[in-house]
Length: 332
Image (cartoon, rainbow, N blue to C red; front, side):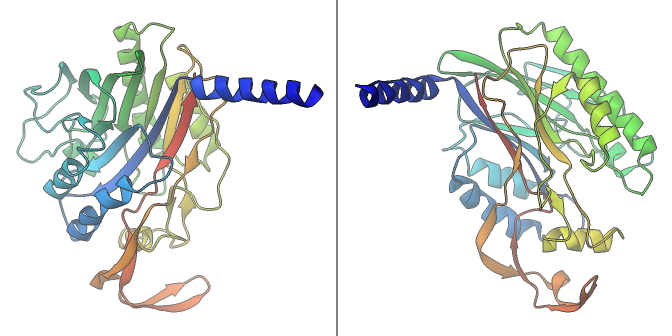
């Protein structure tokens, strides 16, 4: 009888677990720039198949750095798996395709789209965009309509609210000025959440490339406090932006003159502390998708002076971006 009782309890627990409302959310910077040769076409061509084949497939993907037509085509190829997709933030300042567009959207021919798109397996009930008022003059980001996309989605008759964003980047060793701008941008997100009057009984999830280094815990603390956000993350061996382990990131490090051994996390998925809390204490993990086969990019070919010695690279690689995506699996 004791064995039977234990089995019944186990089945009850499994049943409760399977009935839990769940949402799997990924944030992915796909590094599809509209300038320079970063092998955009080859990487974009391979991206859809890799995302389609992912185990533990995300329900929602918060895309950033979708700046070009190659990115558009790649995301369009995911329409069978992710039939609900927002427009690109800041691509059209008329607000076409959005239920609302706010902020400082520029129509200048010298300003590019913001690059943020949200993909969902489940119906999008509402979608809104905001272009940041806070931006660092003189930086590359100043020439883009960077901001955030907001969606309300419905899965199994339950509502979820998600925001995908891409904050101000740092282009030198001094992050103080950029950090101040990022906090201003996060304040804009928080103000938007407040203005939406989202019921406290519904989850609010925020994610994207925050450009806040996990190694700088004081900046992480500022980020979480400003956004009233919660995060459960343990430092991984390989971060989401690892020049030490990703040859495409290493090429980026070489071009922009920072350490070829750089290894940190810049990408996050949070949940808002003022709204419905997850029941499973979800942890954020870095995922490492790669194309199954390598291809040639001339920029990589040649000798590289690495910290552990001189290395010859044949030019073949299979990375899809300089970032790896992060994912959180929520249960409610």
